[in-house]
Amino acid sequence: MGTFTRSGAMVGALALVAAVALSGCGTEKQEAEFVGGAAPSASAPAGATGSPVPASPGGPPLVVTPANGAKSRPASVEIGAELPDGAKVSEVTLTAADGRTVKGRLRADGSSWVPSAPLKWATRYTATVTATRADGTSSEGTSTFTTMKKPSQVISSGLYLFDDKTYGVAMPVVAEFHPGIPQKDRAAVQRRMFVQTDPPQPGAWHWIDNGSQAYYRAKEYWKPGTTIDVRIALAGIPLSNGRFGNVDRTATAKIGRAFEMTVDNATKQMTVRENGEVVRTLPVSLGKKKTPSSSGTMVVMEKMESTVFDTRDDPDPENRYVTEIDFAQRLTWGGEFIHAAPWSEHVQGRQNVSHGCVNVSTAHARWLFGKTLIGDPITIKGTERQLDAGNGWTAWSLSWSAFRKGSALPVPAEGAGSPF
Image 1 (cartoon, one colour):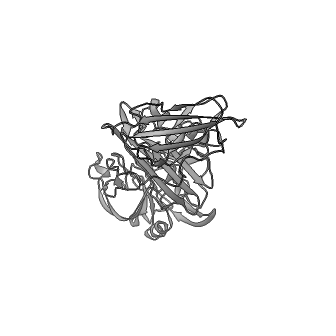
Image 2 (cartoon, helix red, strand yellow; image 1 turned 120 degrees about the vertical axis):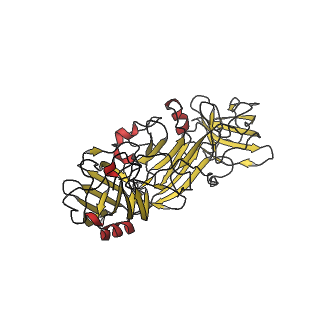
Image 3 (cartoon, one colour; image 1 turned 60 degrees about the vertical axis):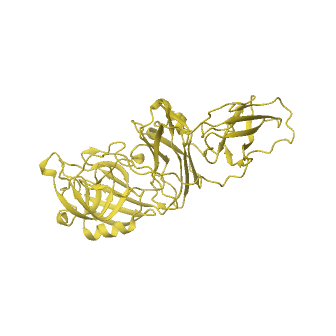
């Protein structure tokens, strides 16, 4: 089947918008519909985590941030202080006007303390901060400040991850923004996008050029069995042009077994590996020269057991058709899929006749559909076209060194560790 043009953004955190119009070699992506964020994590203890501190700080008082008496602070505000040389924030207590203690966590670098959920709008808070030096001496400071009223101008955000779901080893964390984040503002936004993995696997963020999406991945595919905890903590944060983040979005997901597909145009065969072992080899037909398949590493983004491809709006009359399709697995927003193609079974393994999709027999498509997870990788090589960045979840189409360069913050060669 053929390809088509992506028409917009997709889901909000933890709520996938299922209604999509079918077009081309698959379904066409709809305008973003961002659904409210999940409940923030409450796993952190009251107060803050950190190193033990002396019971009676003896150093000079700290100047806490936000400053004492400050008004209209963002609901995303972090608690910190003007730190003496060599000191780190070691303990924070934040109390709302009603006396309730706010939960939160210290950043690993000791620079600030992050509330576990956005603060309430137009509410007074009191923060007590302790900072400790390497020699064990400490200082303390207190500040009372007020958060801003709920803003009217916001930037919508989305998170392509479902809570309590299992994904393939190449599933990137995908954050989406509408409108996109200008380059000058991305570092501040990225500092509020938290990813933790168990077992720990250092990673990095990468922004696509227009700032509408950012991907997070590790240097290599996730280890099978990994747990990924994500918080896109943007509620109330100033983003750009007087707009603020709309909500916090959170998800905790699992990574399943290793399942990888490799397609070689030279042989027109798909090699399927599970946990490193070859389990099946399938003959395929890829895109013909006029509508070639994309070479690169993609991931399965969507699965539909039965659907209809409708390309009647294609400007080229030769590419217009309406066809029922079975066992379709989306690879790109442009309309490239793996799917059953009984009409091309007689040339699969020998000739490319599709409009850009990976054609397999009905029997093989049914088997593959029953094995794959969203986030399973497929690498296609040797075709006439390279995969375009952002045409799907293209986090793995770049080398690690190239991927790191797309971060708005410096990233160590082996990746950045947990922020907490």
